[in-house]
Length: 122
Image 1 (cartoon, rainbow, N blue to C red):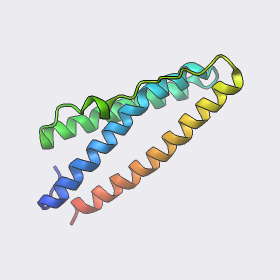
Image 2: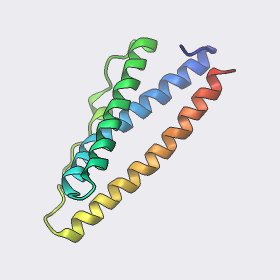
Image 3: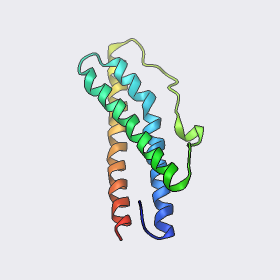
């Protein structure tokens, strides 16, 4: 259980909601990456399922701590409007951009989790 003052709990709730929404936002993009990469597909499949598992864990925490059962639809899902074309180069660029952005998001998430951990120990 997270302890702290009211401001820390609000910050915790905001951070967890942002992390959960971001993880859920990347699910359709990671599915596109998974279908686009034929080699090393096990790693991509693991990454996608681990991302979903982490999003589920955070949503369970949000539900237990703050009573939040779901995120707004706009926060939760971003439809892929442009599927990658069948051109190899275009597909490779699309996959690269998705993975680059996902990496940046995960780096920020790790910083947020470290911050929440330090706030809860005060």
